[in-house]
Amino acid sequence: MPTLTKSISGWGRYPAHTCELSRPERYADLKADQPSIIARGQGRSYGDASLNEHGHVLLTERINRMLELDIKQGIIKAEAGVTLAEILSVCVKHGWFLPVTPGTRFASLGGCVAADVHGKNHHHDGSFGKHVLGMEMLLADGRRIQCSASENSELFWATVGGMGLTGIIGTVTLKLIPIATSQIQVQHRAAGNLQALFELLNDPDLDDHYSVAWIDCMAKGHKLGRGVAMFGHHASVDEYRAALPLTHHVKSVRNLPFDFPGWLLNPLSINLFNQAYFWNEGRKTDAFLTSYESYFYPLDAIGQWNRMYGKRGFLQYQCVLPETQALSGMTRLLQAISASRNASFLAVLKRLGESSLGMLSFPMPGFTLALDLPLHDQQALFTLLDRLDQITLEHGGRVYLAKDAHLSAENFRLMYPRYADWLKIKQQFDPANVFNSSLARRLHIGEQP
Picture 1 (cartoon, rainbow, N blue to C red):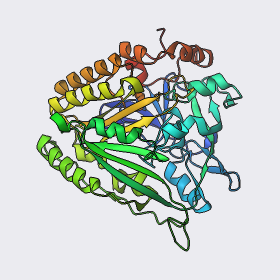
Picture 2: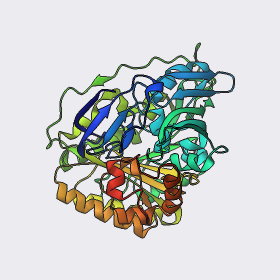
Picture 3: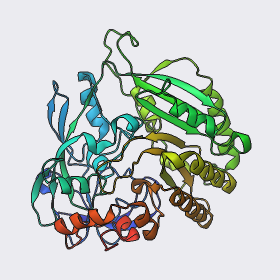
Picture 4: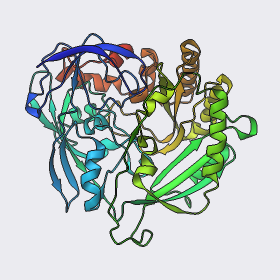
């Protein structure tokens, strides 16, 4: 298979590593025939999870056939390179939707399993792996085996959330959820500070199938953590009175044609944006209908939106804190972020439910905060991230590996207590550590704890 050596990065554009790339054209061409290899779908993880510096990266974007769709049962089987957008284009018109979706529809199916992605409905429905009925994997010794929660279950739960380090995910069978319309019924509620925002997200009378909150990271003092909670559910036919309620016209994506100058996203511009966003979204007190794209994937409307952060890129930081520690911990996190003046205009707070059975899966019961931090001053940003990691640890939380580009190996061990269990499965199916990545080497994943 032809190869190409070049520098690539994740969605945050930091770091960039030189890797040897190959791109199989067919599922039958998938091979684990390199001493160090990692599969890469659409490259939508933010840091170095899909990089393999001076090693091999297998691009799976062409391994994207949809194999089976049971319209009556809502079950789809597809190759791992299929994107969520491609699945939605087929399933929505038949009255089915993804059981869990991250904030972009351009992630690959295999990537969603490897990162065990979570969505706005995690507190009700769990993470992605919970809805995977089975998958075929290519192992280091060349075997292709089936695994699920009941067949080769240890390998299955080591792979769900395992960041591609147990083998190559070839095909995935996924259970979908039924919908009656293509629209989302949404209700906004503004909160003047973090305490009020937590009260909104914990209010059973407001809670809906999907719940999320935007936070103003620049707010200080008595306004610290102010934001807008957004509750939604798939609209019923009574709520969306249309002749063809499942019809949906996908909006065209407009690509950002150039990199923004690095100075454009500064404390002043972000503060102005946050004030305008808080006022505009907070004033929507009446329930309203919107397309599923606008609700779940607002940034997808801008192709290559990561160019807004300039050539240096950005780091996304996402952590979860257990419920009893969440308010105090989030307060300290926001205080540190606000004081640093390295704030984000994309800051999201969500409530999470039960932990996944995935051994390296991120979610736990509590609250998760995700934010994008521009990479203007690397030393200052890394100092801030060290502080955020320490606060997260002190409150019993962990950092999401699919978003990470900075965590230390020591802190990884403290945050992921099931690593030793995962390592036993890794060594059983990949004793030579063939499946490796820049993320794994940075965090010493694959080594004894």
